[in-house]
Amino acid sequence: MRVEFFDLVISDLIPERMEMGKLYVSMKYSTLAHLCACGCENEVITPLSPLDWSMTYNGKDISLHPSIGNWGFPCRSHYWIRKNKISWAGDMNDDVIKINRERNLSLKLSTYKDDQCEVNVAPTLSKKENVKISFIGILFNGLKKWFKG
Image 1 (cartoon, rainbow, N blue to C red):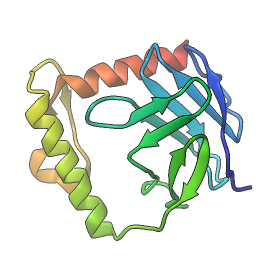
Image 2: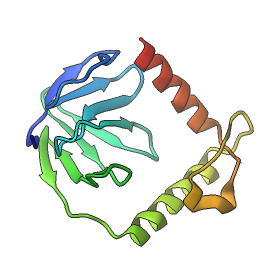
Image 3: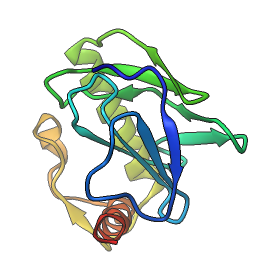
Image 4: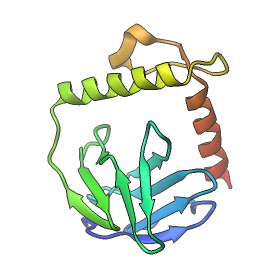
């Protein structure tokens, strides 16, 4: 069942089983999570950072920027969250998705230069295997703590 609106759940931790139509917000871990708005029930995690997503919260409503593009899911859903409402967007061409992912990774690499964490990047970016960036390690560890609660 497709979701058109999210109810906010503001908490440090998210439950083991998220509910459809709920947008879980952890200010402590600078992360939002929800089940895909298309109804497929895949978990969508959106980390907040200057190079990932940003959130606007007015005490009642949340808006995220940029859009949520679930290209790795079979549903390939694409939507905006604006004032808790879902605004559906169209599918994107695989070449455009690849270019955007490479641009985003390049920006992160130039911003977070550090040798603290080694990660293996997506196969589509094979030229940059075993890239070292501390930001992803920090984010991953924070998300692990958040989920384990």
